[in-house]
Length: 285
Image 1 (tube, rainbow, N blue to C red):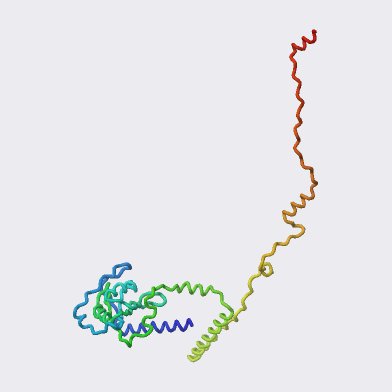
Image 2: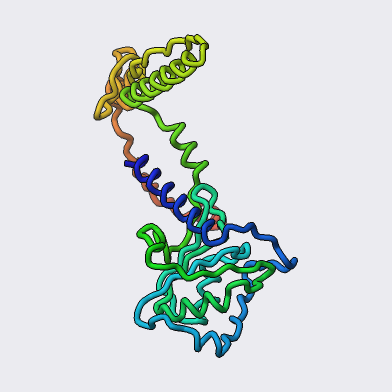
């Protein structure tokens, strides 16, 4: 599916390039040194002459498509819409870009809501000097408008990180079936090249391709399969948990009676000492 979509997109881009070359076959030569800078004011459109307004014969009810070539660098979708919408309402706008790099190809297709507006833009902006580039504007006929003309129009452009995507693709692990498909493609390519060389008179035998190796089993730690629920580590009789050893030691120790607080013994009240003078008087008596 991806290869088909890429081929279809490439064909659409080639058709647009062919259409642009048919409309503007000459190569562009910058006239002035002036260049458009990012963020610069796009300016105002030139005044539409009365002769151009009188010569308009297109219908106002049908939309009209204009090809604009030799667009200045930096004058992208947002700037073009700002500038050209001064002529009238724009339905769709597509700036052709390089699919890989995202760089502008300097030509675009703009669809206006009214065909008369598209004709005015074509006659006013054709050979108009804009930021050092002489624009080429042509109204497309209905035969030149196809389905892929506005593919991806009115979308914000975002650069595709091709390098990053390629790196991720290289680091992505491949399955056995994917490797077999790659090997078969390589064998077919080598067979086609060998047939072409044989037709030219060269005989060349390419080295044989190696067989696809079977996918290696996932690494198993300690030779055992990983368990869904991790079990508790087994303990040998020699190695016991610290808590259990402490309990055993406490049981082996003899139980000692608990020490009780000694109640203080109250001392007998001491007899009051009699003075010596009274003792002497009693002895004389």
